[in-house]
Image (cartoon, rainbow, N blue to C red; front, top):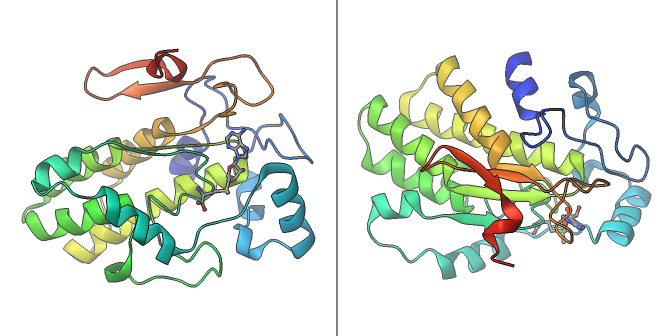
Length: 232
Ligand SMILES: C[S@@+](CC[C@H](N)C(=O)[O-])C[C@H]1O[C@@H](n2cnc3c(N)ncnc32)[C@H](O)[C@@H]1O
């Protein structure tokens, strides 16, 4: 797990680790030994929850609302085109629109069949449409590459990344009844560390710096500046 955590903490723009970017630690990097202290919002104490709502507008969306909104944008009928459809959860928090392992408000675990995130939906389709492990893995990589998110606060970003990582493992286990291979998981972690990135969405920069964030175009294999995507 240490290797995967190293990848899941990496900032692909700076090459360093992602920052805490909260009131307490500001631009301090999150280290592997900090990971156990990171708690989802539903486990944070009430005062801290209130503070984060005040300073960063942190309030999370319940799965029933994510479901309604995701229903509206999931209208591609060709399953392979759907796997490839690009989605971005802006200010993603713990990424409940992408993956729904638990109710982000209450913390209640959600069984695989009831998951409603955009990446969950891709995996429901992959588990239904593919039969052998090579086809499954190819579609899984494509699905993870197509889902993006950014977030200011480092603990939320780490949890979003871990939620996506664990989701891929959950769907693999459900399909093949065993643990996924390590080289596949390293590849998945690498993609996640590009696709869920730390950014001040008001400035398109790494928090507290003037450095514009880079993301990956998986079709060309070349990184580019997110700000340039917006054509401003
Ligand atoms: C209302 S929450 C939404 C989280 C998640 N998308 C959801 O629906 O549950 C807003 C999130 O935006 C983040 N945030 C606040 N200011 C930000 C900024 N300037 N750039 C990027 N993210 C920001 C907060 O840390 C928080 O996680």
